[in-house]
Figure (cartoon, rainbow, N blue to C red):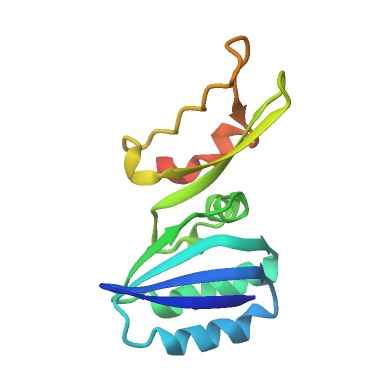
Length: 155
């Protein structure tokens, strides 16, 4: 796993890239030092390819080490990240999700669409409406089961 840091007016944005796995522990230790005096941290997950169980463990440990006294926000969470948040609440910790991707499919047209959803655009504890398909005769649906995928929005 690699990361890049962008200084922002009120904190730092960390873009995580690659695989979050057993090798990520050292990277998180380096990142911990980079965030020593930062009060607001955003994490962009759009370039995370996958997360395995040892990566989850390393991430949760890292998150716990930086949570206190900081505002943490997750951006562009991939479906893999959302599934981890839903299965393991400590993956999110005290952070909030600002935006996330949803994969939509239309089984009739065989069309796929990946859509970025801004959490602030949704009424509290509701799930986003599926986009309309190009044809009026069919409709898109989430690739994942809605009841399982959107659990984090209902907490």
